[in-house]
Length: 268
Picture 1: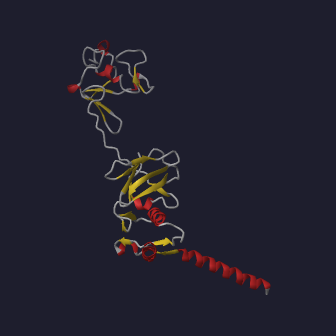
Picture 2: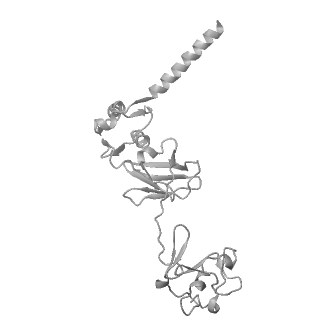
């Protein structure tokens, strides 16, 4: 019986606390009416700008100046004194403080990312932990976040409003597609390398390599990767560690069994 009674009391006090917290906030338009009667001032505003905004009820001891300053800091509206008696409320020229934390899809902080307010010179760089912050940002501004290797991210400044905590943003990685590169001149003119890895030497367009006095096919071949001559002769060529008798040399579709004829002059 005592346990049930204690539980009822706990629920009662919990509900009272929730109701008390809920009653702390009121519609701004109602608070404006109270302030007008209390301080004998007039507010100028558009109903659509203030009707959906909830604010904490000002304390009875607070001055008008401190109340207006608090409303400027806790709402997205701009309260401005035209005179001591007339106050305007608008969303125009309202600036806010923004902040955020940039992370990759793997939850790794992005350090050195660029955060720019569009159409302005205002910007920032993310710190080592991916955090950034800026002040006096127009409430209607758009923020662009860019980082090398990642997709650009555009977000409204209002979504980054530094009200209670900084928002965490996940930036997606960007897939870079490289353009195809065609090498028309490999080592010298007349040498072409195909996609399958083979190399073609066009004798009609063959150029002279450095150190030679005239085009020499077998001498030029030794400049290719994996091709050399163990005994430093022109005719005896070793391809990728093979012996010279394993090479197939065809001259005008005629198989040559000994490329060293005429003391290697066949090369020229």
